[in-house]
Length: 330
Ligand SMILES: [Zn+2]
Image (cartoon, rainbow, N blue to C red; front, side, top):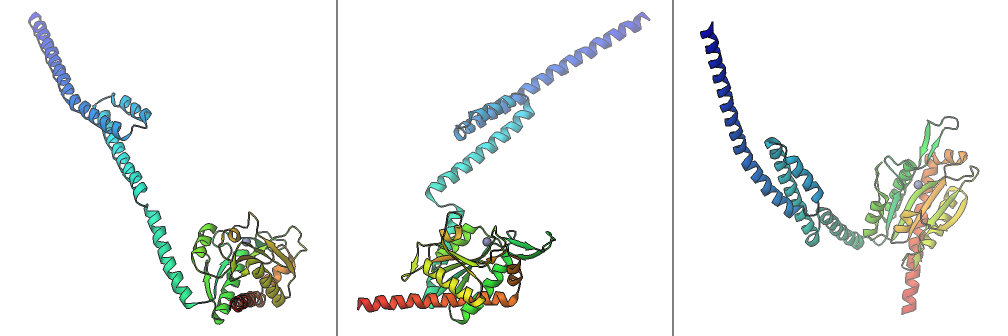
């Protein structure tokens, strides 16, 4: 028994000895592994210092985290390098923004050049050019008219009415050899500012935006025109165009003229346009009788004929004024 106990203690001591040596070896190995990682961290910190001088808070946080262990250090090192690369890229693009235009600006510039070339070509070919702007489109329905007792049943949307009348007007104007540019030809939605910007690049004589109106008084019906009094085409101004259009359209449709009004702050498309521009409000969607009329094909055609007639007269008046000026100059 004694011999066996002694052997047991010898074996136990040996086991402890081996365990101790293994631990020491592991410790030494860990130290070796940690050394290069710590060095890399130092390097990447330098990168960070160069690239990220403005954000010391974030840098400190990453360094604190990195103190945790070899693996964490490696992750943090990657992150630090990524940060530095990102920063370098963004610095590059920042620098580029100062010297070279961004991609967006280049595209805009390219678009502008194309538009200008197109504008010149159109102008060479056509003496009379009109921009038709059917209001709203896509998700933007504009005003809607519903069945009297059923709010969910839409009878009419402003976007559809405006587009339909615009397309009819376009066909009529083209027969008269008046060149038409549409801000939309389908059920599409575009920022108002983009539509107006595009129209402003083109060399049109008149801009006509087509809408309906909604009045508090449901008894009220008829048509009105809002105009931008800043611009003239050969002596013919937006106010003249507004008067002429209202006269022609109400004559054709036998609808009541509600008047012409200079644009206000909220009449954005008319306010932003840089040519004689008007917004024709072709009817009150708040009036039950008017809704019925607006839904009819023959009525829509009459509205289009009225707009076409008004524009034709506007061009005639403009030319007359020009010829008068020419005679005066001679
Ligand atoms: Zn509208």
